[in-house]
Image (tube, rainbow, N blue to C red; front, top):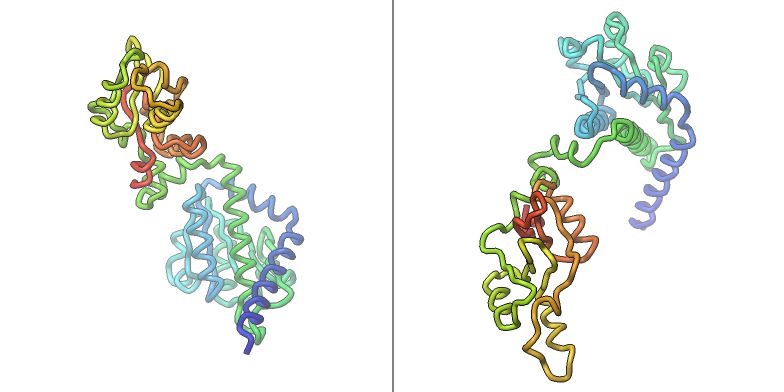
Length: 315
């Protein structure tokens, strides 16, 4: 058995299904976005079996990206959980066949309460599509299953359709990293996005020198600071920065090492600065962009600290 050949066929079949899905997108997708974007309630997702598992993921993605959402099991909905829905909500019902019994049984109650119904379905002439207000076509030409029995391509298509909805809604809502962090405070990314520079900066015993500070004193300040740099201040204003790299380059600049230079001769002017109230993620972005490991922190134009890249990485 050629296992790699089989695996590659699965990838190819499902990739083709996604390509076809994109070609089938029409104005109904835009209508679904408008409905979900402007609803006063939540976007509820429901489905049975594998469609239910995919539906739960879609609901979770929507909820974490700015669209209030949750998954409701159609079987439980028939036994009281329909009370979780309000007329202000939107229901996304998922069924590849469009004939899933449990889904069809909840439609009369949905209609009676005038809850808009988005039918995410693979069969255009199915009962679900006929009963729905908006049809999102998730049809596939073939399943990746060798027996053409287990839903594979169809569940992938459904998942991608859900992601397309979520991503489009994020753009429409101008959903930003800070918003994402509010919904993910427990994760590393969330903590990083919620942490401010002031929470991580070194603010005590900063290694500060004057432009006229001489070499020996400069080295003493840099080594005692244990940050691998010195801040050059004049009249409490930042005029430059000296890193251990600057120091090494100065020592190697001549055939014979010089030990008589002053801070102003080797400092780098116009160092990068970040505000103390900025998010740590902003400081990280600057450091990565300019390939530096530390950045000066200011508050109302005064130097108040230094933040290091590794400190953000440890969040």
